[in-house]
Length: 139
Image (cartoon, rainbow, N blue to C red; front, top):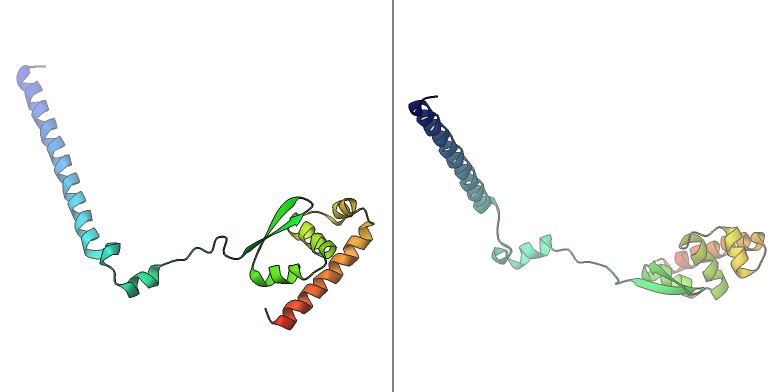
C-alpha cells in the first residue's frame, strides 16, 4: 500500500471519528436541554408540590414484639397487637406460633406438651375471640 493511500485512509478514519464525536456531543446536549425543560430540582419545588410527591416510611412505627418461647415475633398493626395483648399468654402463643412462626398444630402441641386436638380447638376458639373483639371495637 502506498503512503498516499495510507494517508487517505487515515484522513477518512479521522473524519469518521470526528463525526461520531460531534453526533454524540449533540445527543448529550439535547438530553440536557430536555432535562432542563421537563425536570425540576427539588429545591425549586413549592411546599405544596413537595407534599404531593413525599412518601413517609412506616417502618417500625406500628410494630409490636411478642416473646414466644424465647423467639421474638413482630406483629405489625396497633389493632391486632392490642387484641393479641388482651389474650391469655397460652392462647396468644398458639396464634403467634401458628401464623407467624408457621408451626403446625403438631409442632405446637409438642412445645406446649398437650394433645394436637387441644391446640386445634384452642386456635379456632381464639380466632373467634379475636374476631369478636375486633368487630366489637370496630378496628
